[in-house]
Image (cartoon, rainbow, N blue to C red):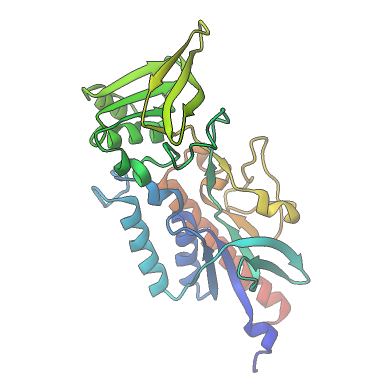
Length: 321
Protein backbone atom coordinates (compact mmCIF):
# COMPACT_ATOMS: atom_id res chain seq x y z
CA UNK A 1 0.00 0.00 0.00
CA UNK A 2 1.33 3.42 -0.97
CA UNK A 3 2.34 5.66 1.90
CA UNK A 4 0.68 9.02 2.40
CA UNK A 5 2.69 12.27 2.25
CA UNK A 6 2.45 12.50 6.05
CA UNK A 7 3.88 8.99 6.43
CA UNK A 8 6.72 9.76 4.04
CA UNK A 9 7.69 12.83 6.08
CA UNK A 10 7.63 10.87 9.35
CA UNK A 11 10.94 9.46 10.58
CA UNK A 12 11.04 6.39 12.77
CA UNK A 13 13.62 7.90 15.11
CA UNK A 14 14.97 11.42 15.55
CA UNK A 15 18.29 11.66 17.36
CA UNK A 16 19.44 15.01 18.70
CA UNK A 17 23.19 15.30 19.24
CA UNK A 18 26.27 14.51 17.16
CA UNK A 19 28.53 13.16 19.88
CA UNK A 20 29.53 9.50 20.36
CA UNK A 21 26.22 8.65 22.07
CA UNK A 22 24.05 10.13 19.32
CA UNK A 23 26.04 8.65 16.47
CA UNK A 24 26.11 5.20 18.07
CA UNK A 25 22.34 5.35 18.63
CA UNK A 26 21.94 6.12 14.93
CA UNK A 27 24.24 3.29 13.93
CA UNK A 28 22.34 0.68 15.96
CA UNK A 29 18.92 1.98 14.90
CA UNK A 30 19.97 1.86 11.24
CA UNK A 31 20.88 -1.79 11.64
CA UNK A 32 17.26 -2.36 12.65
CA UNK A 33 16.27 -0.80 9.34
CA UNK A 34 14.89 2.29 11.05
CA UNK A 35 14.47 5.51 9.07
CA UNK A 36 16.71 7.72 11.19
CA UNK A 37 17.51 11.40 11.25
CA UNK A 38 20.35 12.80 13.36
CA UNK A 39 20.49 16.55 13.96
CA UNK A 40 23.61 18.15 15.38
CA UNK A 41 25.29 21.55 15.49
CA UNK A 42 28.78 20.29 16.38
CA UNK A 43 30.21 16.99 15.17
CA UNK A 44 31.64 14.92 17.98
CA UNK A 45 30.32 17.09 20.81
CA UNK A 46 32.74 17.36 23.71
CA UNK A 47 34.76 14.48 22.25
CA UNK A 48 35.92 16.74 19.42
CA UNK A 49 37.76 18.90 21.95
CA UNK A 50 39.97 16.04 23.12
CA UNK A 51 43.54 16.52 21.89
CA UNK A 52 44.44 12.89 22.50
CA UNK A 53 42.30 9.87 23.42
CA UNK A 54 44.15 6.85 24.79
CA UNK A 55 41.41 4.93 26.61
CA UNK A 56 39.11 3.94 23.74
CA UNK A 57 39.28 0.14 23.25
CA UNK A 58 40.93 -0.99 20.05
CA UNK A 59 42.52 2.37 19.27
CA UNK A 60 45.79 3.12 21.05
CA UNK A 61 45.90 6.85 20.30
CA UNK A 62 43.59 9.16 18.35
CA UNK A 63 42.43 12.76 18.44
CA UNK A 64 38.83 13.48 19.35
CA UNK A 65 37.96 15.06 16.02
CA UNK A 66 39.47 12.16 14.06
CA UNK A 67 37.43 9.64 16.06
CA UNK A 68 34.32 11.75 15.49
CA UNK A 69 34.95 11.82 11.74
CA UNK A 70 35.40 8.05 11.67
CA UNK A 71 32.11 7.59 13.51
CA UNK A 72 30.35 10.01 11.16
CA UNK A 73 31.58 8.13 8.09
CA UNK A 74 30.36 4.81 9.50
CA UNK A 75 26.96 6.18 10.52
CA UNK A 76 26.38 7.76 7.09
CA UNK A 77 27.40 4.51 5.41
CA UNK A 78 24.53 2.79 7.23
CA UNK A 79 22.01 5.26 5.85
CA UNK A 80 21.42 7.63 8.77
CA UNK A 81 20.44 11.08 7.53
CA UNK A 82 22.66 13.62 9.27
CA UNK A 83 21.60 17.27 9.34
CA UNK A 84 23.84 20.08 10.52
CA UNK A 85 21.39 22.40 12.26
CA UNK A 86 20.12 23.25 15.73
CA UNK A 87 16.89 22.04 17.34
CA UNK A 88 15.28 25.07 19.00
CA UNK A 89 11.90 23.57 19.94
CA UNK A 90 10.36 20.20 20.82
CA UNK A 91 6.76 19.12 21.31
CA UNK A 92 4.48 16.08 21.20
CA UNK A 93 1.79 16.38 18.56
CA UNK A 94 -0.82 13.64 18.06
CA UNK A 95 1.17 10.46 17.46
CA UNK A 96 4.57 12.02 16.83
CA UNK A 97 7.32 14.18 18.24
CA UNK A 98 7.97 17.43 16.40
CA UNK A 99 11.32 19.21 16.36
CA UNK A 100 11.66 22.75 15.06
CA UNK A 101 15.09 23.60 13.66
CA UNK A 102 16.93 26.91 13.53
CA UNK A 103 16.47 26.79 9.74
CA UNK A 104 12.68 26.75 10.41
CA UNK A 105 12.39 23.20 9.09
CA UNK A 106 10.27 20.76 11.11
CA UNK A 107 11.08 17.10 11.65
CA UNK A 108 8.55 14.55 12.88
CA UNK A 109 9.34 11.15 14.35
CA UNK A 110 7.74 8.24 16.19
CA UNK A 111 10.56 8.07 18.75
CA UNK A 112 13.05 10.56 20.09
CA UNK A 113 16.61 9.97 21.34
CA UNK A 114 18.15 12.80 23.34
CA UNK A 115 21.95 12.88 23.17
CA UNK A 116 22.29 16.55 24.02
CA UNK A 117 25.51 16.41 25.98
CA UNK A 118 26.55 19.14 28.38
CA UNK A 119 27.68 22.76 28.42
CA UNK A 120 30.81 24.14 30.01
CA UNK A 121 30.43 25.37 33.59
CA UNK A 122 31.54 28.98 34.15
CA UNK A 123 33.33 30.65 37.05
CA UNK A 124 30.94 33.63 36.99
CA UNK A 125 33.64 36.08 38.08
CA UNK A 126 34.23 39.72 37.11
CA UNK A 127 35.98 39.91 33.75
CA UNK A 128 35.02 36.41 32.58
CA UNK A 129 32.61 37.56 29.89
CA UNK A 130 34.74 40.58 28.96
CA UNK A 131 37.82 38.51 28.19
CA UNK A 132 36.12 35.49 26.64
CA UNK A 133 38.01 34.93 23.41
CA UNK A 134 40.55 37.52 24.53
CA UNK A 135 42.53 35.31 26.86
CA UNK A 136 39.78 33.27 28.49
CA UNK A 137 38.74 29.95 26.97
CA UNK A 138 36.81 26.82 27.89
CA UNK A 139 38.70 24.61 25.44
CA UNK A 140 42.45 24.14 25.72
CA UNK A 141 42.70 21.95 22.62
CA UNK A 142 40.73 24.48 20.59
CA UNK A 143 42.66 27.59 21.61
CA UNK A 144 45.91 26.38 23.13
CA UNK A 145 47.91 27.00 19.96
CA UNK A 146 47.45 30.76 20.38
CA UNK A 147 49.37 30.66 23.67
CA UNK A 148 52.60 29.14 22.43
CA UNK A 149 55.53 30.24 24.63
CA UNK A 150 53.20 32.25 26.87
CA UNK A 151 52.00 31.92 30.46
CA UNK A 152 48.63 30.30 31.08
CA UNK A 153 46.51 29.18 34.02
CA UNK A 154 44.04 26.33 34.17
CA UNK A 155 41.21 26.10 36.69
CA UNK A 156 39.98 22.66 37.74
CA UNK A 157 40.99 19.40 39.36
CA UNK A 158 39.39 16.72 37.22
CA UNK A 159 40.47 14.80 34.13
CA UNK A 160 39.62 17.61 31.72
CA UNK A 161 41.78 20.05 33.69
CA UNK A 162 44.74 17.66 33.75
CA UNK A 163 44.29 16.92 30.04
CA UNK A 164 44.55 20.67 29.48
CA UNK A 165 47.67 20.85 31.67
CA UNK A 166 49.41 18.07 29.76
CA UNK A 167 48.47 19.54 26.40
CA UNK A 168 49.39 23.14 27.22
CA UNK A 169 52.65 22.19 28.95
CA UNK A 170 53.97 21.27 25.51
CA UNK A 171 53.05 24.69 24.11
CA UNK A 172 53.15 27.31 26.84
CA UNK A 173 56.18 28.69 28.65
CA UNK A 174 54.57 28.37 32.10
CA UNK A 175 51.40 26.60 33.22
CA UNK A 176 49.58 27.12 36.53
CA UNK A 177 46.99 24.60 37.69
CA UNK A 178 44.58 26.21 40.14
CA UNK A 179 42.25 24.05 42.23
CA UNK A 180 40.05 24.93 45.18
CA UNK A 181 41.01 21.85 47.20
CA UNK A 182 44.28 20.24 48.23
CA UNK A 183 43.54 17.04 46.33
CA UNK A 184 42.84 16.50 42.62
CA UNK A 185 40.04 14.31 41.27
CA UNK A 186 41.81 13.36 38.05
CA UNK A 187 43.33 9.97 37.22
CA UNK A 188 46.48 9.32 39.21
CA UNK A 189 48.54 8.69 36.07
CA UNK A 190 47.65 12.10 34.67
CA UNK A 191 48.51 13.82 37.94
CA UNK A 192 51.87 12.04 38.14
CA UNK A 193 52.70 12.95 34.56
CA UNK A 194 51.78 16.60 35.16
CA UNK A 195 53.98 16.76 38.25
CA UNK A 196 56.95 15.67 36.16
CA UNK A 197 56.59 18.73 33.93
CA UNK A 198 59.13 21.40 34.87
CA UNK A 199 56.96 24.24 33.56
CA UNK A 200 53.84 23.25 35.54
CA UNK A 201 53.09 24.72 38.96
CA UNK A 202 50.23 23.51 41.19
CA UNK A 203 48.33 26.20 43.12
CA UNK A 204 46.08 24.21 45.46
CA UNK A 205 43.48 25.56 47.88
CA UNK A 206 43.11 28.52 45.55
CA UNK A 207 40.24 29.99 43.53
CA UNK A 208 40.19 32.59 40.76
CA UNK A 209 38.00 35.52 41.83
CA UNK A 210 38.65 38.07 39.09
CA UNK A 211 40.13 38.48 35.62
CA UNK A 212 41.86 41.78 34.81
CA UNK A 213 43.22 43.54 31.76
CA UNK A 214 42.61 46.30 29.26
CA UNK A 215 41.95 45.02 25.73
CA UNK A 216 42.87 41.44 26.63
CA UNK A 217 43.47 39.33 29.74
CA UNK A 218 46.61 40.36 31.62
CA UNK A 219 46.15 39.20 35.21
CA UNK A 220 44.02 36.97 37.40
CA UNK A 221 43.26 37.46 41.08
CA UNK A 222 43.43 34.29 43.16
CA UNK A 223 42.22 33.79 46.72
CA UNK A 224 43.38 31.23 49.25
CA UNK A 225 40.38 29.15 50.34
CA UNK A 226 41.81 28.70 53.86
CA UNK A 227 43.23 32.11 54.71
CA UNK A 228 41.29 34.39 52.37
CA UNK A 229 44.56 35.98 51.26
CA UNK A 230 44.51 37.35 47.70
CA UNK A 231 47.26 37.58 45.14
CA UNK A 232 47.64 38.58 41.48
CA UNK A 233 49.28 36.47 38.79
CA UNK A 234 50.25 37.74 35.36
CA UNK A 235 48.92 35.41 32.68
CA UNK A 236 48.22 35.55 28.97
CA UNK A 237 45.51 32.91 29.07
CA UNK A 238 43.01 31.36 31.47
CA UNK A 239 41.43 28.01 30.65
CA UNK A 240 38.35 27.12 32.67
CA UNK A 241 38.02 23.34 33.06
CA UNK A 242 35.58 22.89 35.96
CA UNK A 243 33.14 20.46 34.44
CA UNK A 244 29.87 20.79 32.63
CA UNK A 245 26.16 21.21 33.18
CA UNK A 246 23.48 19.27 31.26
CA UNK A 247 21.90 20.89 28.21
CA UNK A 248 18.27 20.28 29.18
CA UNK A 249 16.53 23.60 28.45
CA UNK A 250 15.23 22.16 25.17
CA UNK A 251 13.33 19.27 26.79
CA UNK A 252 11.26 21.22 29.31
CA UNK A 253 8.08 21.23 27.15
CA UNK A 254 8.16 17.41 27.12
CA UNK A 255 8.22 17.16 30.94
CA UNK A 256 11.09 14.69 30.93
CA UNK A 257 12.22 13.87 34.48
CA UNK A 258 15.65 15.11 35.56
CA UNK A 259 17.57 14.70 38.82
CA UNK A 260 18.45 17.48 41.26
CA UNK A 261 21.46 18.48 39.14
CA UNK A 262 19.53 18.53 35.87
CA UNK A 263 20.63 15.23 34.30
CA UNK A 264 17.94 13.17 32.55
CA UNK A 265 16.75 10.16 34.52
CA UNK A 266 16.89 6.92 32.55
CA UNK A 267 16.38 3.24 33.25
CA UNK A 268 18.63 0.42 32.03
CA UNK A 269 17.00 0.66 28.58
CA UNK A 270 17.78 4.39 28.36
CA UNK A 271 14.04 5.10 28.57
CA UNK A 272 12.84 8.31 30.19
CA UNK A 273 9.52 8.78 31.98
CA UNK A 274 7.94 9.84 28.68
CA UNK A 275 6.90 7.02 26.36
CA UNK A 276 8.91 7.08 23.16
CA UNK A 277 11.62 9.37 24.56
CA UNK A 278 15.07 7.88 25.17
CA UNK A 279 18.28 9.57 26.32
CA UNK A 280 21.96 8.62 26.22
CA UNK A 281 25.44 9.94 26.87
CA UNK A 282 26.65 12.70 29.17
CA UNK A 283 23.13 14.14 29.53
CA UNK A 284 21.85 11.14 31.54
CA UNK A 285 22.07 9.69 35.04
CA UNK A 286 23.30 6.43 33.49
CA UNK A 287 26.71 4.77 33.80
CA UNK A 288 27.03 5.83 37.43
CA UNK A 289 27.96 9.35 36.39
CA UNK A 290 31.17 8.04 34.77
CA UNK A 291 31.01 10.27 31.69
CA UNK A 292 33.50 8.89 29.19
CA UNK A 293 33.40 8.31 25.43
CA UNK A 294 33.16 4.57 25.97
CA UNK A 295 30.16 4.90 28.33
CA UNK A 296 28.45 7.32 25.93
CA UNK A 297 28.88 4.78 23.14
CA UNK A 298 27.43 2.04 25.35
CA UNK A 299 24.40 4.14 26.27
CA UNK A 300 23.96 5.12 22.63
CA UNK A 301 23.89 1.48 21.56
CA UNK A 302 21.25 0.69 24.19
CA UNK A 303 19.14 3.71 23.20
CA UNK A 304 19.37 2.82 19.51
CA UNK A 305 18.41 -0.78 20.22
CA UNK A 306 15.40 -0.14 22.46
CA UNK A 307 14.08 2.86 20.54
CA UNK A 308 14.02 0.61 17.46
CA UNK A 309 12.09 -2.07 19.32
CA UNK A 310 9.69 0.61 20.55
CA UNK A 311 9.03 1.83 17.00
CA UNK A 312 8.54 -1.69 15.64
CA UNK A 313 5.97 -2.48 18.33
CA UNK A 314 4.25 0.84 17.80
CA UNK A 315 3.88 0.13 14.08
CA UNK A 316 2.51 -3.36 14.74
CA UNK A 317 -0.13 -1.95 17.12
CA UNK A 318 -1.17 0.69 14.60
CA UNK A 319 -1.22 -1.80 11.74
CA UNK A 320 1.68 -0.14 9.96
CA UNK A 321 4.67 -1.77 8.30
